[in-house]
Image (cartoon, rainbow, N blue to C red):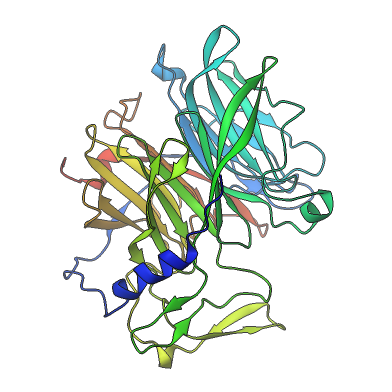
Amino acid sequence: MQRTSGIAALVALTTLAAGAPAYAAERPAREVTAKAETPALYDDEAGGDADADDPAIWINKANRARSLVIGTAKNGGLRVYDLTGREVQSIATPDGGRFNNVDIVSGFPLGRQKVDLAVVTDRGLDKLRIYRISPAGLTDVTSAEAPLLFARDQAEVEEQATGYGLATYDRYAVVSRRHSTRLGIFRLEERHGRVTYRTSDTLDLPSSFRLPDGGTWSPCAEPGEGPQIEGMVVDAEAGVLYAAQEDVALWRINLRGGTFSSVPRIVEKVKEYGVPGTWDAESEECVLDSAADPGLGGRITADVEGATIYQTGRHDGYLIVSSQGDSRFYVYDRRTNRPVTRFTVADGPLDGVQHSDGAAATSVALPGYPKGLLVLHDGENTPDGGRTSTNFKFVDWRSLHIAKI
């Protein structure tokens, strides 16, 4: 089944864009510090071209002390860490692979057992890579018959408009397509003791938006590229996907089984929404005309990135997203999507978090984290010794001082 809802979403957005958003006056962002961090990853030849990006938390139900944090390292593959941040496993990509996002599927029927899986988008090969998780580490169980996610053939894979962002729920993976507004739902299936997948539904978010003055706006991008989505999380109990379209907004989309079941609605736009921009080929960057800002944007400084949910009940808790442009994080009520607070991870005993791409949270009590753990990608790990360095920071949820909803 394929559904293209860009026009419907654009119509819905016309009303939402009718005026400047109203946010209550906020206190300055709360500053917290990280309790632990993972080893530095270096995006150079000596470091194996490893670049941290997106984390996931696996809870070991039999022994929570042996729970794991799994992080993507792009060309550097996957890294697996214990709760102190110590690396316990490193997994290389297949030839031509580049691992982008990771999420967890629990209780997947494989053979005669129910197992937990780490599902990874391989944007280099336009495929999902699937690993069985155990306390001893990860084992590849991807079927050799696993199909391409979006590309029609290998020539199209080479163009790298491939699988990018990822969020899982039940037996499904929601995947975004790089340089595109497309989202796909893929159903995970066992085949001969391995795991493959098939397309269940697709949806296109809009790439241009009607403004109150009757004009239209599209976010500035390199010619030929659309406003892509990366950060995503599924609230399985509510049947809702939250999708971060980097230069546009955080979207809320209802799910029913393996289908998109509603017109996408915006939770919050980026600050730069509606601001005209021009692509500068020499610098390979967009130049925004801030003087022409129509004042339609929200609080988030583009890109809007990593999204995660911290549960306090079946339908209660918090939605957290990264405001990558100013290294802040915004917290929303999970049930109503109303703003709750914002915070930064500042320098302390460990360095802080800057330009964060990915996030993962759990409210499960873990050793050292009795109220849960928040893991954040740090895009500027320091000190880096003159080399580009990234890693993951572990934050004790208690440090956020958010009252239970």
